[in-house]
Length: 145
Image (cartoon, rainbow, N blue to C red; front, top):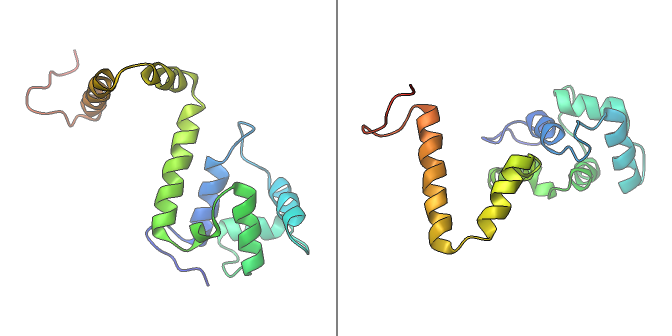
């Protein structure tokens, strides 16, 4: 059985992949995942089984099934077992999702054309604004007017 860890249960990890990996701007359907996984393995992979794994109705898939899910979503199979891999992959997925936003992409592309000192200044400005929005800015922070 796949151990539940700080990265969540198997069902939570699969659910996160559905939510985070959306190359068509929407979640994959259970049928799309099942057909994709079936094409990657020898044997059957039903949409019901995918749903059962995602919802926690089933929590003991075979190695073959986990490898197919990992390949389909483009993550290493260790994603289902290792908290460190979960953290790393989730950071990459969050970045990919952020870069789908045209404003974020434009900022990133403009930052690439800046020299190192200017890029560090921009990062400090973005961090300060982010802290102000969260209400965690230092004692000199001005309240929102």
